[in-house]
Amino acid sequence: MLSRGALRAHLLAARLAGPVATSREESLRSYRLFAARDPRVTLGLDPEWVWSERDLIALMADKCGVSGDPGHVSGPDVIDPERTLSGLDAFAGRLGDAAGRRAPVLFGTGHPHRLLAFYAELADALSAAGCPVLTPAQGRCVDITTRFGVRTYNLDYVRGVALVRERGAWDARRDSGAHTHSPLPIRAALEGLAEAGGPLPELVVGDHGWVCGAGQLGFDAIGLADTDDPALFVGEAEGRVSVAVPVDDAVRSDYYRPLTRYVLNRACLSQ
Image (cartoon, rainbow, N blue to C red; front, side):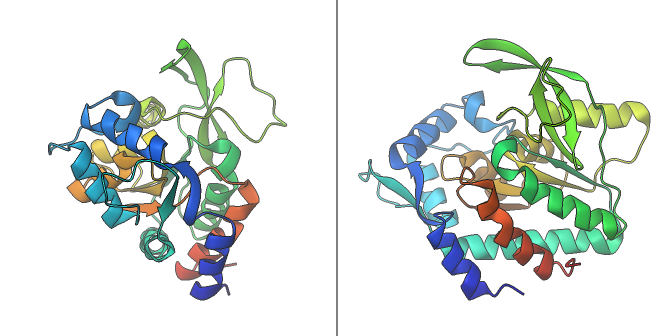
């Protein structure tokens, strides 16, 4: 069993928390764009409240532990590891509740190169506990606006975790897909479920648009978010995202393994 203290030490050593790779400049840019309701950073969330840049700085200071000083404009951003641990505890609680009810669950990630294994281990554990892990609309085309224009992706699943691949990138040996912030993939997946008449998810687990897009539609949604992803924390503050865990979402994939062990243990899902 991984103790809270051991995981705290790992978070700091791996730069999952403490000073992280995300810069203050990147985070402030995201807050400015979010305040302007730019869809690139709202991630499918339609905020009910008015959020200024200062409001977002204050929120992120409270939720993540970043500097609350608007005059602090450069250098690495900081995540308080205690907030990460508390977020993981709440995250595990939601997984444990879903397992107890054998609830249908949908997993999806916009960070497949980094977070796929983290979610896949959780999906395996919930499946073993009797939860249907949903994989709807596999292969469906999703047109997503990128900085290179509109590109067509296909919805795919790896070990029960949804992701998108560029059209033509259907190599079965590949374990990862494309990085995306878009909420369109979760909408496509939910549309596929509705068309098939199957059960809808009682919990959506993921990041970026998977969480915000699901939360906006009224689904119970939990996920991980970096300091430049204010949408998940706004969603949590407004009551449409159940849990947003502050953590660097772009470190090496294997650095998330201790988080997986901790969450599964806290959720009483360890094998």
